[in-house]
Image (cartoon, rainbow, N blue to C red; front, side, top):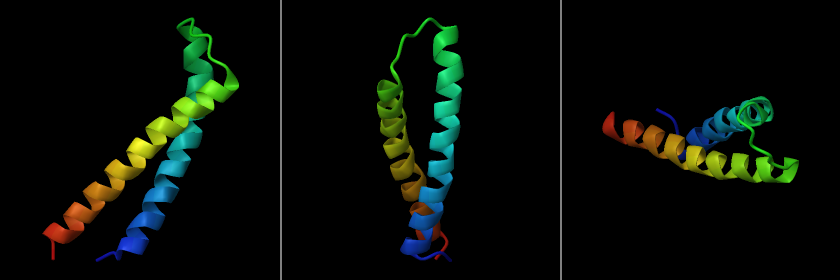
Length: 69
């Protein structure tokens, strides 16, 4: 069973890599749909979704750790 600290480290690593992938995807996809978004705005959008993903992944992981005790 993972400790809360281990869950958090894994979650941050997982979602951090997702953030990098999301930014790369945004730079390609947004222009394809005519979305004129500045670099700074893309970073902000990415951080919003990243914060939600961090909370979601961490809470789901902790729930399943609790459930399997």
